[in-house]
Length: 132
Image (cartoon, rainbow, N blue to C red; front, side, top):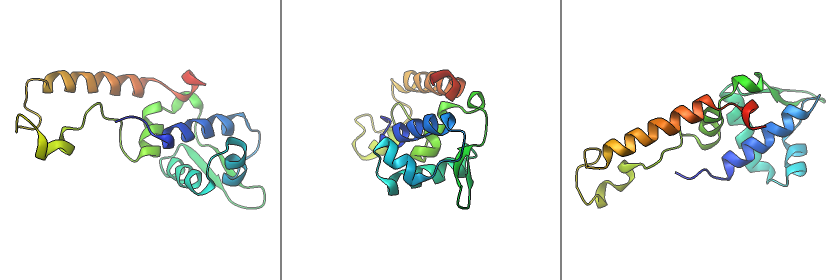
């Protein structure tokens, strides 16, 4: 799976939020980053549901980081933004066209599993603080 705009927008938003001394609303972020507000609002809510952001209500409300940047893994951000973990190759989506006919047990399955493990380990070990 390639990362989509959702992950890109999540990372850009988290960068802007971490730089702010006060909570930032979805509309302000959308304007600053030139991102469609409705799409960004969904991403921000997902980040809040996963405990990455905290949503504050009221006239001076908006979003703030719920954790230190060094406690937020890039994998958690991607999962929150995309709704699933990044997959190198998802065999199950090709069940009907698999040339081998045996999803998950073909000759390249061990390679794909090893590759996925390395990607997962890398993204789990990489924090927001590492990339910003």
